[in-house]
Amino acid sequence: MRTAVLFSASLLAACDVSSTVGVNETVLSVSSCSEDSAISACSKEPCVVTDIGGGREGSWAIAADGESVYFERIMNVLAKVPVGGGDAVDVRTDLDRVWAAAVDAEYVYTTEFERGTHRVRKSGGASELVMHPKGHPTAIALDRDNVYVTMTDENQIAMAPKAGGQPTLLAGQSAPQAIAVDEHHVYWVNQGIDGGSSGELVRAPLGDLTSTEVMLSGLNSPRAVAVGGDVVFFGSPSQVFQVSKAGGDAELVVDSFDEVKSLVAYGDTVFVAGMAGFARARLGAATELVDSRGMLGITATCYGVFATGWLQSSLVRYGR
Image (cartoon, rainbow, N blue to C red; front, side):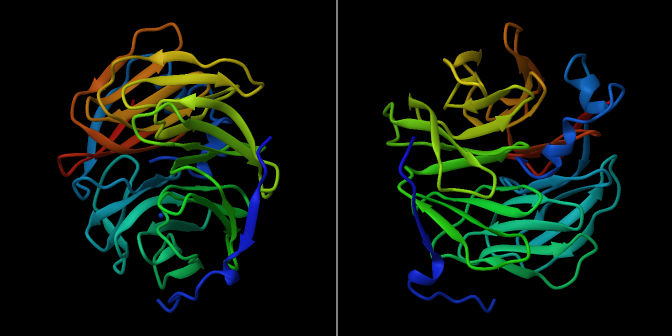
């Protein structure tokens, strides 16, 4: 067990608070998708990639629910399109260097490089500050009550109630890169010293950062994480591994995939976005490249898997 070092943001120097594929609360409901849903079918059999919009080139920010996909349309603008494609509708026009997005039943949440974490109603309107600890929030995940973000440059994990408030900060991490939740835990990967084998897969009970557990250590620069049914997937520069939630050794799922950037999972299947494109894989099966265009952000709902373009303005859906 790791000793948790926690403190309130009020102990930090004051900062201006006047002023969201990866992983979000919808992942909690993906596990209950029906057997005839798109995500269930596309985890087992070939599906098709459809362009459903044109997001900002090189944007990580993507989240989805049963109706819409939320993405960075252009700099400073968060928009949505129907999950099957259609006209884009702007939801926010005041983003400031958005990094990642997540969604729950009512709101879209974003991390913004120097403005903290905000949320806005899915129908649009004024944005609300969730938390603004000193530093640069990056990846984001939600449970039913809380927002979790990685503070990569500050070596911290931050947690706050969805409605906003003083965040709890977990110090002592080593460049946390990605974060995800299931029904019981929040998981993240610490990249460690780049190029060395000092990375970690860590988890803590939902709503409680005081009892962190290092599931795996000695990892090679992990930078992506996703939670499946009974396993946790994590991605290093060119590989994807899985480990049982009950513990044990990591098993190689994907090898030689150029520049893994983000993951999302359904059951025992993991979907990978990176420079090599957009792929589907599971343990013991050949990795299937479903789109060769470089992809960056990725998320999933019962209606399919959605990804943003890395070097091109694209927003795609992998579904029926």
